[in-house]
Length: 462
Image (tube, rainbow, N blue to C red):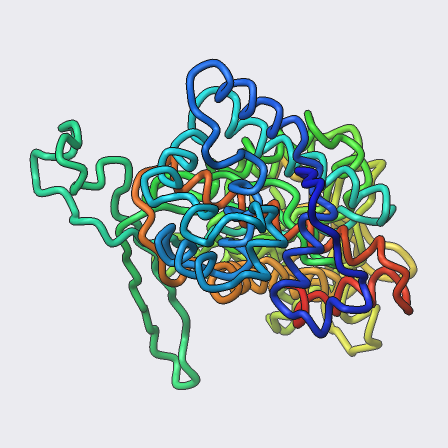
């Protein structure tokens, strides 16, 4: 943390009673920001005055994140009226409030300074350090991951047609952002199809989170129109480079249909230590196309868009769904069994249902093995029809809860941020504070298991 000699820290026993001040204490106590402090102090020593010391102002910026202030001016008003907050941040207690608290212009210059040179990179480096520290505290961190994007609106005026490539000379046009669109489709109980379209002007925050502890491990800010399936491979590459142990121990990654892409799926499955992609498939077959033949010379075996395999009885013509029997790593194939053999059903065409192509029959019924070469997006190492897929896919809601906390507890529902660099800084600060709270809570001598303590972060800390 940025060490302040004249102030003392509250004990952990006081955190629950102190509320937001306690959470700020927890962040300041945990965050390893000395490299950033030395960089900012060295830069100021060369070219500026020291009316407002770097370390208290930085602590005040963190307080703005914890206290959910929408603007720098709102944070200044809080500092002017709250003497206890000034003391926690490390401002000179001898000076009057208006002399100790930085002016609006000084605070704005400090925030701009965080966007210059190495400062933003050092903040992102703090995120990586916190992820690594949490991984050491939680050996199973990263076992299940989830990926999603979050819409972040900006309230600046949208550029008119022809203005997109102009420089923002007056500061009133948002030139880094653009329009994002998400479409949600489904089928009602009566069989009719519904569609809901959501659009916004601004950015996307892409996240990879630990699905068990609900903690971010990788992130990226893009324009709102950037596709989700393009960001996922980049974040996974960065995660591999910075925290290879997390991906090495990862068993599955859950995401929604936006990530149903061959590059994403291959990135997970073609590794030396494969990761199960728990990603639903988009309904992208042509209208009216219900099934496709699976095996040459065995046209009674068909599959649908979601990877379910069906057999048509050669005798009665009855169609039954075959039974998924797991994934054979040695053959790199899904294994499916005859439903009549598995469930003990009467089937007049069982003897005629002979082996052709990849099909075979034995004492316990016909077997069909399907490799990924048949359809790389449809036949994954974990069938989308299995109960395990459903169980792992439910973990995707963890990233939605992280997005909700960013909106509610970190002020992303209402903000005045404009520009991609400022948005990247604001997202980085929020995620660093979130991880610092989690790490600080884990290191405190509280009762219960680490998982229990992490879940308790939702109310008092996150």
